[in-house]
Each structure stands twice: as structure tokens, then as C-alpha cells.
Amino acid sequence: MDTASVLAVCRVHQLLSVEGSVGVTAIDKRPVEGPVKVHKLGLHGDIQASRIDHGGEDQALYAYSQHDADYWESELGRDLPPGIFGENLRIAGIDASNAIIGERWKIGLHVEVEVTSPRVPCATFQRHLGEPGWVKRFTDAGRVGTYLRVVRTGTIQAGDHMHRIFVPTHGVSIAKFFSDPTLADIEALKDADADGEIRLQPEYRDEFEKLERRLSV
Image (tube, rainbow, N blue to C red; front, side):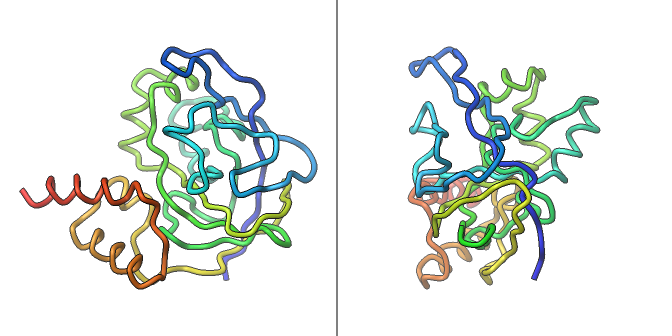
């Protein structure tokens, strides 16, 4: 079993004003000290300003690997502390972007989470980073991190060990589905969902239809 750890647990520091119908964003996440309760909808004290594109049980937490943060620090020539990507968990030892859709991790003594879907970058993310062309760069690199569903609640804190407790057999990773999905990948995910090996969030159905139309041309 792979052993990994939580480097930082991050939740919203302050709401920032943005353009659009919601008017604010909770992307400004920063590390907190001590144990934090994890509920089905995420960290205690954290929020998602827009539940249309973020949050809910299938996107309760967002994890980003230090390995990917290191890559971007080298590319951008600047420090990228935990929380800067809007992540709740900065982790080491597990590659969040290349996690298999539906795999499960145990964090600390009790918390269990399930890998659900990739993070899709948006204009708010670009403004927060202050990097021109960031949406395209982030997309092209495929180092997107992963959203997580909370399977078992509890408390977590920086320094907690974490490890994989289940890896599905379909083999389709977050990064593969985000960057280079194939018809075979879609069928593998559909089969795994139908067999009860994983539980895909409803949004995958619409995405499958779009991809099937594009890939079948």
C-alpha cells in the first residue's frame, strides 16, 4: 500500500468579490492549524460560493498534490503555498491528478474519501492566480488535481497519514479522462458504474454524450 500524508488542510480565508451573478468567490483557501471536522459536504467552516459549479457531496473536497505544485512553482518562478489552487488538501505521496476515478483513500484514523472528478479551471481561478493565459496552461498541463466525495466523516489535520484502500480495475485516471479520453475509457467507466465497482456522479452522463459525439466523428 502506498503511504502518503496531508501537508495542509485549507479552508476559506475570506470571500473575494468577482464579476458574475454570484458576486463572490471562496477560492481564497489558506491552511488552518489543528484538527478540522470533515462532513459530507466538506470541511467544517468552509464554503463554496457557487454550488452550481462547485461543492455538493460529489465535490466535497478538492485535493492537490505537492508534486504538481512543485511543477508550477518551477514553471511560474514563484512560491505556491497550500490553498493557492483553491484546494482543501495539499497532499504528498499520492498523485491526485493521476488517481483512478473511484479509488478511495483513508486519511487519519477515520476519514475515507473517494476520487470523483477533475477540476476544470475557470476565469475566477485565473484571476486569483494572476497569471495570463492560466486556464489554457493549467488545462494543457493536465495537472488538475481531483475532487473527492466523503465516504466516512471524522476529523483531519496537517500531518495525517493517508493511503489508498481501494483502487478500481477500470484503470481510467482523473488526468486521462480530463486530457485524453477515449471511447474505450468511457465504456470502461460505464461498466464499472453499472457493476457497482464505482459510483459516477450524474454529470458524467452528459459528459459521456458530448465525448461520444466528438470521438465518433
